[in-house]
Image (cartoon, rainbow, N blue to C red; front, side):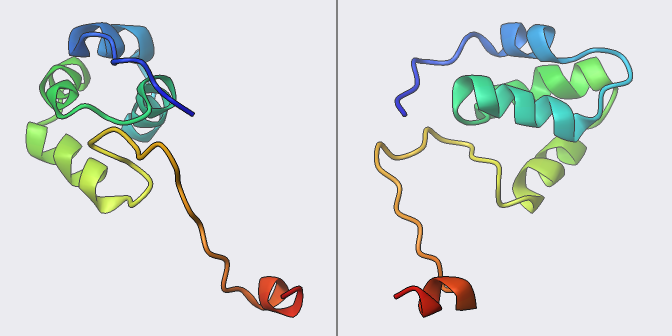
Length: 88
């Protein structure tokens, strides 16, 4: 899946942040739209959610699911689980 260039950081935050929504939910929504979390989103998101930039950055880097750069055009996943191995 190819992604267009993401909207402006303030626009992404405005679209996805609502009072009472968790930081994780907002980060997932931004990544679903843009394909990754642009680093420029951290400051406006922290400001909107009344968090420090360090808190937002900490969540963003703690979970391996979040990307801070555009994903590669082609992704390869290797399943090493028992069920996959039994199927060859």
